[in-house]
Image (cartoon, rainbow, N blue to C red; front, side, top):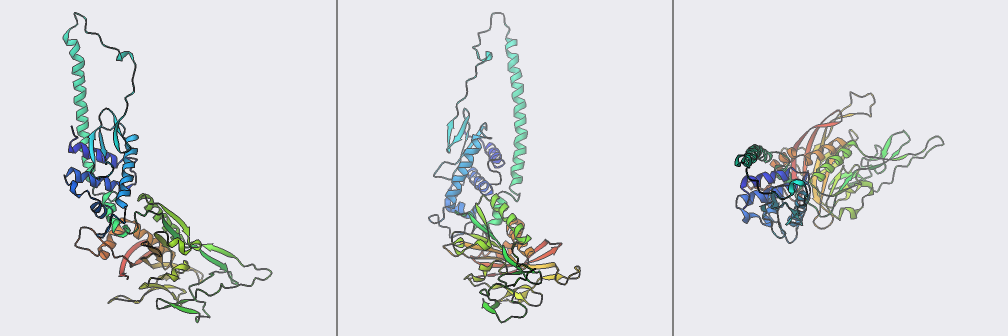
Length: 467
């Protein structure tokens, strides 16, 4: 006898809410999809290609011979099911299994205390219990009334009725919770929201590299920290600029600014990472952990070109701190350039469309500070750039603000479903399709309102598709 539809839905929700699948949003989406399709008698749709495009966010050109994401996730799901039924679900009445070599689930009753072992339902031995009550019961002696034998039966029937009532109440509660879960942002809805942006990066067979800026500074003669290889040219020497992407930048080969120490003054070398990069690493780490994607973190000064060839990478910070970003081969239409007026950077639009400014400059508040060199940032701009990687089919995701607060905002923008949903409305290249698709390479410009050193409002400005 096969469990009814309500029992199957109840067991599905129980597994989705279990500790075994805690924060495994991709696997939850996978399991929910195959079970619901099976219940609707749509097993014909449980094919590798359809699961890849509808559940895992792959593009319509998905090739299972090249990308094994569905098979990898199926193996992980089987392992999670095995873990669940070996621990918290070992006494469950209903078993959900997905045998190897297929994506159609099998839902059966747990007969005689079965559990899923290695993806196959196997009988679990029932321990022998020896007690006085387990001894054989002798037939009733003559003179024992039939009523005395029926009383225990009546009590048992009453208890059974009470138990069935409790199960009915629990069923309606679980069914209501299952219906509500389909609209919650965590779960399938959340994965569908973020998949257009992250489908080019997740899942990745190799750990994703997160690189944060960690710039080398030195103390100058006026007791101020300065970049060893500055992007901003020195005020008295603007002739050392060269051209990158049609914009003049400080010469990267310019030697370090040398300070000759006196007997009472020593040169100080130190490293610096902005608060926005730190918060960005935190946002990305939490996001990738929830997506069950392995990653590694490295500071940019220790990067080499081989690091960017091995797999997908996320870079935090602008070319002001990440020197290697000044040498990427792919042409970009939004670039960071020095702004001599406020000794900061601007984002220049090399190919402005109708109505787009040629440059975007942050706003500072100099009136709330005593010193002329200390300012508060009121408004920043940031770029989210998806670029071609340096090896094979890997990608680079660069999250960079003009200031460190813009970098933090860019990291929040790509990891929060509400922001990605807003982005999808602007960047979706298949608006009339059931599956949203982003271009292969693009840049997104964001405006960031800042209050007390905290990004409080992040808004889309425009985007450019790259070749």
